[in-house]
Image (cartoon, rainbow, N blue to C red; front, top):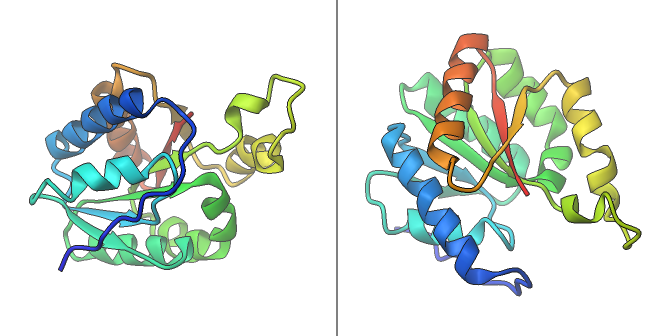
Length: 176
């Protein structure tokens, strides 16, 4: 039974987000992704909505992001090709699960992370504190990452997936 994605308030451009989400799902299908594991947030919920329409990819919702790493790693061991889709705050919450499963196992997981607070980093606006230490944390954990650019989703996700297999560990694609 498919999980129902609950819509939350979103203050961005819904049409732009929908177009980008469609391109992301198309790229995941092209990569042969079998499962999408994670927790929807305000931006990724649209990706999950489109994934629900793609029978080739099974959506596996989790309660906490730490579960996403363990489940995705188990799917990989079982011969599947999962993607983890979470927010940066969830990544920080799930650190020990990430370390103890995906990193220790060398699971080449493609990971999409919504970069909450990114747009306030260079302004005088109230900065969501997670944005200020997210990238330094990724570097400290030696987690390779790249930024997702509009209209290059397929190319970037493919390169990140290939890199994950080359280095034998997760690689993150950050969505701003």
